[in-house]
Length: 90
Image 1 (cartoon, rainbow, N blue to C red):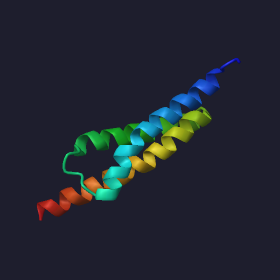
Image 2: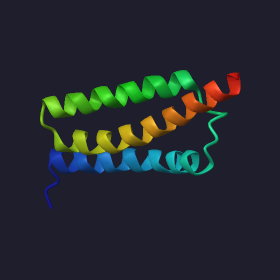
Image 3: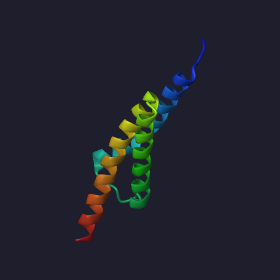
């Protein structure tokens, strides 16, 4: 069986997205972001958005697929982190 670079891209995209899923689900379930770094999640979410834009610009479906899902999960976590940080300041 010949494995093409496109197949490798989809496998890599699936694995990296799945590796992020347990943290995302735990955070969304508990809404606990105390141990998460706001600066790290801000940078990470921005980086994923830029990868998504890059994937769209070169029409790479594997990059678009992985980064669309990861961006939505990361943005959800970042939103909870910002909300919790602002709430704790009051």
